Image (cartoon, rainbow over all chains, first blue to last red; front, side, top):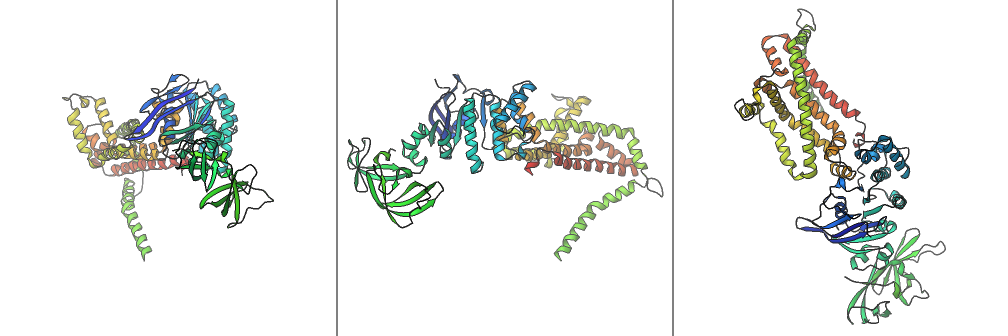
Length: 352
Length: 260
């Protein structure tokens, strides 16, 4: 039984349809990310769940109750914003205790809960500070504590890490996930950063043009994208055009070599299909068990620390190839010739 | 050469503003023949009429400020939050008191709310006081609205409102606990300007026949020599004290320091 259900949700601003027939079911305690480019409607969906936007049509149910007609302050939802949104006139402790005070909780109970929350976010000694005395990362932790203090039924995170620098972003996302697991709170996380979404979610919803293009576990979305958009948006992708030789047997001709794909094709014989391959699906050199070996020229080398990304030209097409760094093997020089090998198992057939 | 002109312009400005004030202050101290004294001030301060009219104006100013805050803060907040497209129109309306003379406003009031009208506010002292307070609020509107609107610009009104809503707060709580405290410095600036306007206002109080400080100053000026000058210095002192308080409050507001 889903804890949070969104059915046929639509939102239009004037003639512009921002969200189109959006459906999603989230189980209790699940962490789901809405991932997509700017303007894809992910924040609008989140704001409709929070009650800040009224859907044009559709239904939102939380724990069995229809919340469409409830005001934001009646929905019992915790929200964390990109801009932190801490109340500047209140101390950290007062910010965290704000929701409980609104509910009319006793001062002793508020103080105990505030202390508990500040301990949870690892800032037990900062209760008396004002928001302007905190760093961005600390402010966002406090915002998280404030949202969680009232024990909401759903936690909504609207790009909470976007305003932070890279290092804090990585550490804070891990912290958010740990806290979410510990409390078992149902969470929706909105982001445009695919690495963020893939690394901390139980499931990812990839959105484009107001539509959920694919919903699935990060592993599934990354390795088996169902649309061309998802394939291109999530991770780096090399795309090839191949000619169908035998659709029933899944045989195509790629760079002049016949390859048998793991699944049959729906496209007719002689037509062109798009095939995609992640940079880590290509290997430098002739590798045992990889049936396809193609001659290539190294055109670019990006050393990124643990990973080296090579730009190689294969059959007149430039593709990216990732290889792990090894201290005893320097990357091949630019302009050198090499062989690259790939397996038909790793090829993704692109739909529309 | 340019520098010389700049200094010259500055000196001219200072003389233009300061000389009459110095002259007036000096004159107010010359009540006793042959020596400087505070006799004029003592006389003014001891006058029961002064105390009566001054207290009346102070009370009117405080009531006007309270009403102005209750009117302007929710309005400016709502316009910023829900009707940003209406801002130019609301700004235009708040600027009208600067181009419509007080005498026109007060005549309008008298015509609309006289004893034979559907709402005879001028029929009682309390009714007239309320009418005068509305008039003062209108006069102070350009300053109050601008101050509050500028204050609202320094905070992220929409996000703070949504954050408070998600924590269960209603509109009243949001306004009282989040918005007002965060624009308090701006509200106080507007309040002190309102105070200064109300203390010195003459037209409305005189035409509505209320015992305010403005008409008292005029009355004294028509009948005495040294006391009006002393009274003018006192009025200036009050206005400047208000300005000083604006500065002081801005400096002592601890949670807004990060914005500077």
